[in-house]
Image 1 (tube, rainbow, N blue to C red):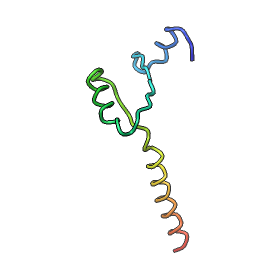
Image 2: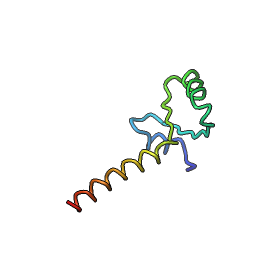
Image 3: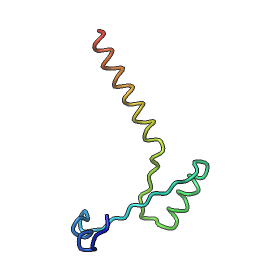
Length: 73
């Protein structure tokens, strides 16, 4: 979204503007990348979204198993 800084300030949570950046990193180098980002910007929050699908699949599978077990009993 392209907008004025006034709109950014108005939409900022607690009046503090937030920037979001996406960075694709080779999984082999994730540890190094997290360390480098943490050293350069210690107050930044870094998330690895690569495993999100795995977690979601696992929990949905467990929930489905519970529902099927409840139906069969």
